Each structure stands twice: as C-alpha cells, then as structure tokens.
Length: 79
Image 1 (cartoon, helix red, strand yellow):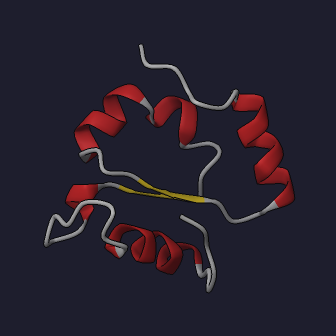
Image 2 (tube, helix red, strand yellow; image 1 turned 120 degrees about the vertical axis):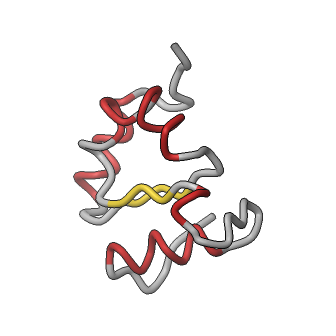
C-alpha cells in the first residue's frame, strides 16, 4: 500500500478551508481506483487521471489540471 505524502487529516483540513478540491494525476484511472480511491474520493470533488483526457497528455502539460478545474467550477488553482 502506498503512503500519502500528507496525513489524511491534513487533506481533510484543507477540504474544510477550501470547499472545492480537485486532484490532477498522471496515474491511470484503474491504478488510482485500486490504490487511492477509497482514501481520496471523500476529500476531492474531482479526480482527473491521465486517461480521462482523450489525448492522454500527462503532466507537466496542464490539460489534466484544467479539466479538474472545469469539473469543480474553479477559475484559479495551483500546480
């Protein structure tokens, strides 16, 4: 099992402070679902994986970040 870089409690605190959180990952959807979904889906409003983009453009290209922002209605984000 992979470990989170931040404790789940810190992610939950971010969620309380910022009501719309999204994650853009270079992982494929199946890999994300198998490893992270049960822990992270309750915290993030949107999760965009590399294969959610029809062009499969991975980071550092901003397409997955832009997709996550669009799904949550955010106009600004950080990368």
